[in-house]
Image 1 (cartoon, rainbow, N blue to C red):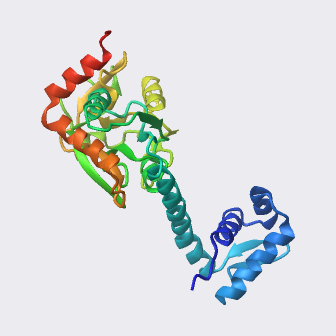
Image 2 (image 1 turned 180 degrees about the vertical axis):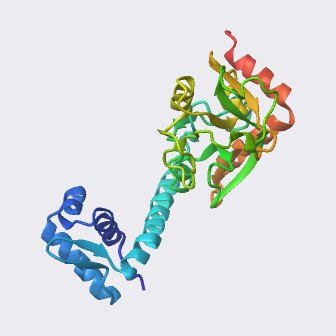
Image 3 (image 1 turned 120 degrees about the horizontal axis):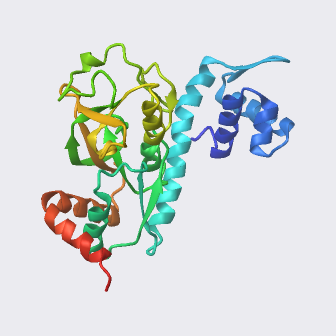
Length: 295
């Protein structure tokens, strides 16, 4: 028997995020007494306290922390299931492709052209994500397919196919000590200031926080830091900046990804078109040119 309703889980997560019943009630647009009563009802049903309460402080118990971690995944899964069901039931629904701005390595046009030649191809809506949430778009059903960079984007819970493998380059000002080198190694970057990417876990940069490549390049231009990126993200480099290959940096892969549980024919057709594009790039380029040419 299910011990927790979806609405009750939403109430719990709001309080767990805010650690304040008043703010959570405002966020949920319900009265605070009703929220407090709902949480007590959940605690009684589960048989464990979820919060430690005082007049000035609210904190999660160990049971509350466990429910917050697993409950959020459960709620996301329910939301994804609802979105997928509605989308699958709409025969006219568009395919939704998510990517980061400029994060297609020049493959977006030939990819769309290759898909347009598939039987029953649908119109493709392009969605732009933040610096690190493309995988979330696919997991929670906001997008059907996405262009992600491995190993930077987490691929757990996603199926994927590699479209492009490329090396990484260090981006430095033209007057930088490394600018004249034909290539460098990661050890040559010791002591350099590197960016902290907003929303990217495990980032070990010591420099200012950045949210996209545009911000990164601006800060490099004024000498605040240097960066290391897949080559396609900075080709050609802006004036005053130089790209130097990093020979021992792990390669970057541009992958087409989708939810591993998504078996819809429309997604399979898009993946098939992408693989055909990779195997026959000249055909895809000609298709893209024909689509963009005036009639």
